[in-house]
Image 1: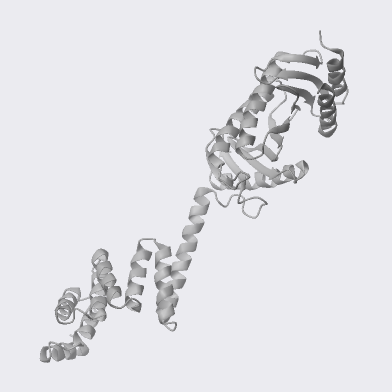
Image 2 (image 1 turned 60 degrees about the vertical axis):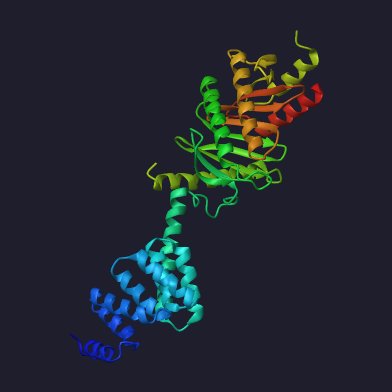
Length: 264
Length: 117
């Protein structure tokens, strides 16, 4: 047994009401003696149930013992006693990080940092969680196709990629009022694309390349950037038709690159 | 028999280089109302396909907030179709080859519709 553990054990034996249990429990936890640490923490809590540090110690032991539910309960108890307790905030942030709930983890760590700006462990934890959140965001964007048209004019509201069945692959289309109409437009455009293919074939026009519609309120440009994929570009009437075609070419190249990255 | 004014309007469109034919089609049922086509072109097929295409694309344009169709261009490697709504549920359809000047054909189509109104 290490000297400091022996010393703290003796101190606690002399005065069971002493706060030495906090140091002793932590020392045992760090040595991996979780059963002993649990006993010390529980006995301490019986005498000092109103101490936030005691619950924080117990929570850390439970976390090490792979009991996240128990640890969470204890850290939440800490926050009822001390709402800005840095240890509890860090602990709950760690649990949220484990659950890939990065927004909650960041909230807790930012609160902890505002309480103790000099705490380097919080700064490092924030960097770790932010990096994980960025990776998660990138994964989601790649999976959902939100980034297909990044950097291209109208990427946030006027470019849509779908398959020939009318299912959205990526991008977003909003109508003139700003409402998202991607799925509805995808369904109708797929029908129009099938009809364009049929007309071109039956009239011996060769493979169809694009379908351009000038409406009273705007342009709709439909093209086939890759087999089984249809690209829709919508622009206002103020945009010349030729520029819409150029925009469709750029968006088509981006769609092809994205489809290739998907293995499609 | 096709009225003289209508015949003249369609003929003028067909004089544009690359235009293989022009016709007026009923948008509801895709039937030919009047036509001026090069030999060998199946007017009935063009009419039916053009009307169906205009209807389907019109739904998409409406849903996308682009509003009512004013002009449609189906571009294919060897030619295309130009569609423009005309009076009273009619659709003006122009069949082209790949050499056509779309802008010029479109102007003639607009002129024809104004004359028919």
